Each structure stands twice: as structure tokens, then as C-alpha cells.
Image (cartoon, rainbow, N blue to C red):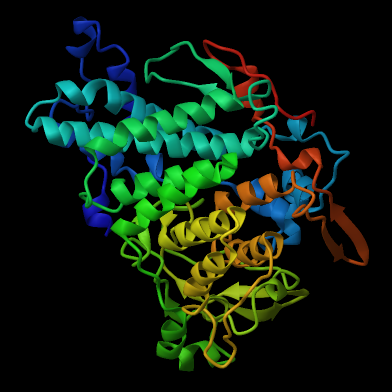
Length: 470
């Protein structure tokens, strides 16, 4: 896949040059090795830049959830890691956040690229008007996705009662150097994301050039995610149903396990099967890397995280195996390849649909939707259809599956934050480490990450106010 997804432009130079596009004299000076985009193909290549535009790094959120095993050396070396991993509410994370800037700058780099495409693609050469409109639409979907990540990392979760009065993140709508911006309210940002998607949908197609280019299914999947986070269940259900019209495939993890059973069950093998969750994953609407963009293993899991998977979960059994190395015992990753942590998949959409059905008192239908996912995950000898007698029980069962299915994604973190606002679903996380007990309360300020100091102290042509006290 790398050969068709390679970037042909040097993005840093491009962004600088395009920012001066209104002054013709600047465009006459082209640094060596830098190409000024003019054709539609030139601009299209920018979306394919996996390093700059196609990563979602949410390390601190994953650490806070304790959804990965972290080494003692990393916890000792990175005090911010330790603060989130051990749920230390006394630590000033703002003071510690002097180097963990990847989440912020990755997202805004991608937003800057989207802004550039939205502004300049309409006047590109060598492309049809329909193809130009499609690329602009794809840029708008990507911009909305990046703002969603930022909003659910650096700002509080969406609550209708206070969304208009709480600040979110900077809304930057230009790739120009020193363009002014405003740190808008949570309500304004969510309205903007939905506006981007609505404007994009008429110009998107069922299929796109690569899995890095959002298509119609991806747009509706993201729309469903945003509406679910807002608690607008009827709108989220409608969008989920639209997404499933374009792709409703579910990968059969029980069959995957059967295919690699000998390797998986070999007690001496820990590196033995290919990841099916890469660029050509059957469930993909849109693919996006997590914190890395190269082939490798997934993060290891804590031993106390594993029991939260259902008994007989083939997806879990296919991906992690218990291992002890020196003083550490954890579940190590046993697949190699790429993982769609940051994109949009059918599994997420099925589970959005299930929760919305439950919230709208369609409990039997919700359980049928949930079981459609589970039957592809749970070994036949362990599987039985789940049922629920009420909305609360149904949502809890749906969320158990969703937290496991989408582990290491922004969705799991966003779900935990919004559910913590409802006493029916709020959960206090607990653990014991080296004989000491720890807990993370649903109302803890730790659920909102501080902006990095590099951004807050050097905000450019705007201001940034922290959304968390420490």
C-alpha cells in the first residue's frame, strides 16, 4: 500500500508558499526541491501524506483509560505519563505538558492541509469540476474529524445544558501563516463539524481513490459519531443507517482465529500472524493511523484489562497473548501490520446504531444489532444471543462490546467521558499497582487533557485558554 499512498509533495514548504499565494512575487521564488501545487493531482497528493495528515495520536487518553500496559521505565521517564496512568489529581499536568504535543500539532497540521485544499482546489488545473468538488468535500470531512479528536481531548464532553458557555478548541479556518482564529464554544465547534459534513455529502461518492480519501459511508459514519456524542440519538441513528447502506460488512474474527489457530496457540510464539485491520480491512469506511504510521505490533494490555473482554472473544484471543518478561507480566500483541485506530469502521457504526435504538426504547432491535457484531467475534461454543429488559441494561451491554472493539481509539475515550455525565452509566475506574490502590472518579478533571505549553504560550494570532485547571 505504501507505494500508492506515498506523498509527492513537501508539505512544510507548500504550506509556507501557499500562505503567500495572494502575492504573486512570492510564488515566483520556489525553494529547491519544493513544488508549488497547481494541478488537481498535486493537491490530491496532500491527502495521501500519511505522516502529516493521517495520524491520530491520543497517548494520554489511552494511558488514562489504562487500556495499555506501560513500562516502569516510561512511567519514570515521562512524568505526564505517570500522572495520567496513576490518576494523580494533585499533579499539575499543565506544567508537565511541555513535550507531549503530538496530539495537538498532528491534528492542526491536518486541519491546515484541509484548509489549504478547501481554499485552493477550486482553481486547480487538469481536473473536472466534479473531481475538484469531491476533493474539497473530502477535506471538509477530514477537517471535521480532526476537530472531533481535539474537542474530545482538550475540551469537556458535549452537554447541551452548558455547551454554549464552555470553551472548546481554536477554530482555525485558514492555512495562512498567522491567520486569526477564535477559541469557540463547544456548541459552536460541534455545529461547525456538522456543517462541514453536510456541505461535503452532496459532492462525495460511494467509492474514493484510496481508503485515505473519505467517501459517502465515511461522512455518514462520522456524522453518526458526532450526533451520538451530542446525545441526539434519532439523528445519530439516521446517519448510522445511511452509512450501513454503503458498507455493512463485519469481519469474522472466529474464522481468523481458525486460520491461524496453530500459531496463536503455540506457547512459544508471540509474533505470528498478520493484522487484518489495515488498509484493506473489510470494515473500513476510512483508514487512519494511530500514533504510528509504520507496520508493527499493537500496544500490550494490562492483565487487569483482559477480563473485561467477553469469554470466548476470538478478536481478543487473536491479538494478544499472556507473557512474562523479567518482572513484567502483560498481554503482548501477537499480530504484525497496520491498525485502523483513527478512522471509521462498520463495527463502530453498528454499535452506534445499537445504542441509539436502545436510547429510543427499541431494546429488542438494539440487541439484535449488537448480536450481529458479537456473532462474528465470540467462539461458537461460547456464543449465545444477549437480551436486555430495559434501555439501561442494553446500553451497558453495548458499551462493554464497544469499549473492547474500539480499544485505543478516540471513540472509547469520548464514550467514557459522555457516559460519566449520566449516573446510570458513570463508572469509577479502580486498580491495584504494587500493593497500592488507585481510582479515577467519573467527575475527575483528569478526563480533559491540558493544551501543551507550546501552544498555550505561543498561540499565534489568537488566544488559548486552558479548559482544565491542572
